[in-house]
Length: 142
Image 1 (cartoon, rainbow, N blue to C red):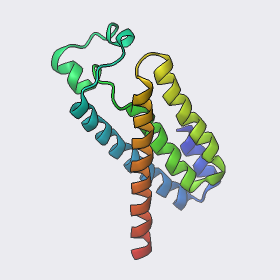
Image 2 (image 1 turned 30 degrees about the vertical axis):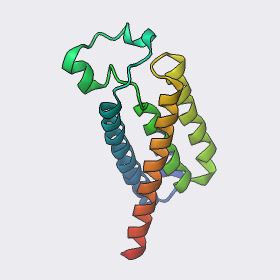
Image 3 (image 1 turned 90 degrees about the vertical axis):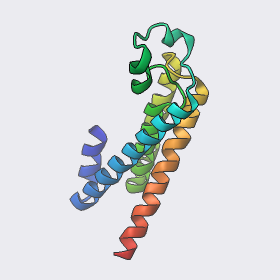
């Protein structure tokens, strides 16, 4: 929300609205892709975290509480950072730093392995890049 406010103040309203829409598409697509990947890979979370999680059975599978790979939070953070870099290049380093801190916090608190965070960063960056290319292509055509 803070990033949206900063972007809306720095850009014209039409550009800010476009940024918010593309960010929403990128984040939702990233969330779907990361959850499908979690269901396909089914990697257990680190032992420190899995002992503290209370969900069992179907609840654990559907909420992702027992699955670690990839980090969906990191994927979403990198998706937002990549779209932010495209729309507000001056803020690209701030967005990247925040996304990296999200990923490192997931490892620090024992919720993910480092490879989960790397995969999430790659997934979020890749999907946001695809969304940006597709939306720019459509803008040129119309």
